[in-house]
Image (cartoon, rainbow over all chains, first blue to last red; front, side):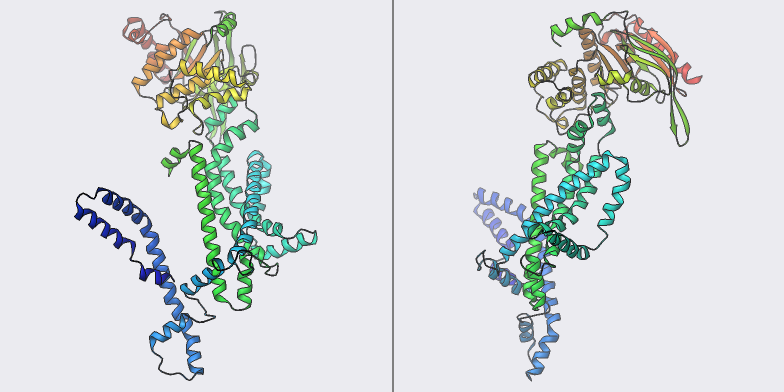
Length: 336
Length: 272
């Protein structure tokens, strides 16, 4: 699908060049030239991303042909077909029903069929499944962020907690989540908690960590002179926290939230696996692997990564808005 | 400062009253390389309405002495009283304003909100806060910059804002730790003149740490010359310059004589 698009529509660089030439030849075409300038800026910014995307697609196609060839040759052998032309071999490897590695256009078509062509309420709609995963991701991310901030405050304000709590926080992340997730589901199920919450708890389990570590650093990032200032006002520790430590840790909070939201999605998907693949992107991955539906697995993977990228971008956007409203946009820009 | 507040405070500004009394104060920092004697046997008395400068080379303990007065450091031995209170009690009652070497304005607060910070902590109502913010912004000549963020101001303006923040608490005692140390000489001269006018107008007691001889002589009614290792007072010089002075006084004979005496004191303290 992507290849088709690349074939039919001319590459943006070329249309832009034509626009420039038109503007130049017309002489008086000031607005065209200005448009050309704006377009040039967009292209300059988008070019590296487009180049990398193009390279990935090319590598993907080559890998798909190479990985699917052995099976295709098997089929030919069983069908007593000999001397198959290379072109046919390639086109056959890219259109198998259950390929080892599906081609990009197969995945694209599958995503199109399961999003645009399916009603959202349908159990075969990827949007339906992505929505289920997204809801537990967001709930877990929210709980993880709050837990992370609270832990960080406790650690910064209590020296003995720093010594006693921090090793456990780090240890919690050394246990493979795949081992912990079923235990959490089972234990919560035993006490009657089902549905969204157990998955969100797994998301929280992963996402509190970057927030806690980042916020400990953020809350401690205050200048000694700014702390002395609070002492000269005989400010209470709550006032010092609220008016000094929390505001100065906001840039740290958003940096760790970007990591946390992506990892919360991983947690939600992992949490969907032991529940028996009922619903969610994790369920699509699992049922795809049960029935050897590689195209289904890959389309769920692609949707999951697009979802993660969108979530990270959203946190980044909120970050920019908040820093701007706090008047920190300039100092942040200077420091980077 | 409104006239009404000056009236209330007028009785306190009495030349006989001691605002700060320091007796036999010593402070030793314990470090990994052994003890460091930051201050040794300091005796000092600051009267109400005085402008006292602490001058000395780096490492002579002048900032440490100011921090002891502000209850930001604890002395090893000796007595410090501030208006008949311990430094801790004085700090709890917000009995002083402190201006640091850096402006230490919070970058996420506008200039007005920065000045409001101590007032919020003091629990003043909004109307009183706004009144004090406006009055002190005017005092340091920062009208029109209320809603600017610190990074939008020059270094000199930032330091003026931090002085306004210290004054907004309306303390009788102002402790200033090299507030103009990071500024260029032209800005520093200008701010010195403004500070002097402010002091003359308000009748506050000021303790001012500096390592600039002209700055100390120009501003002070009393110059405390300190010497290092261990930090101690080498000489206390009373200035007889008129209270109402401007920058031209720096060319007068009286000023140059005082400057000479401070310089001799600093050198002698260094060599001892």
